[in-house]
Image (cartoon, rainbow, N blue to C red; front, top):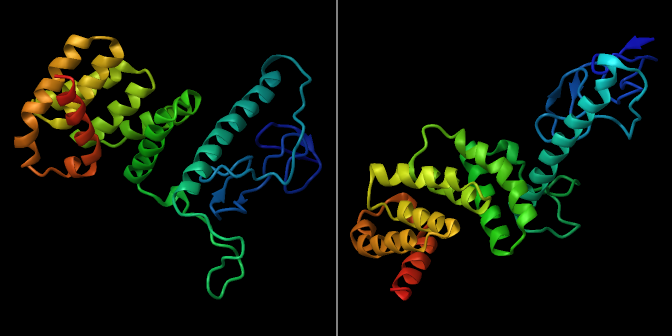
Length: 255
């Protein structure tokens, strides 16, 4: 009999715990090859379950040991969330392939790139694009799901420049985190009062707060600042050219 390092259950020897499914000894993920510690039920890199099949968690007992099923269930839910989001983002990272498509000299099908290999900034950009599209489609539940991952991802990109603050603020705004969105707009405009993305974010946040007067004021500033700021040819202006064009056109139409 062997004691499981994850749930402390006493069971027969083997690769997996018969009670909770955790690895009894350190190994590697069958999906991405990442090293997995003893006691793990999911790969920390890609979220792939390391257990060979569904397992039952004992629900008997009282006191501290009775909390084990809840702890395991919470960890599984969190890992599943990461896996769902990662798979969704991976699917969008490259066009669909025909079922028979293979790498030359390899019989295995091509796979989309693993987002775990992307830089934090690349992952944040992928999340931003996905959230903006979901918001346009009116998929509120999906927006909240992806925003819950995107916001801490953006906040980890220290130090935050104007471009990151704009993206973070836009995500916060569509997720209903208006104080966070306003803080990003204020910070951008404090450093550069005519920054086009800062003015756009400030106007969007004012709209969502129902402050039409403030939104109109920011849009008027945006129209006045646009020619001179465009001449600066900032990288964030190039990357968000469509946002700027749409915001300036809407501001001029509302005057």
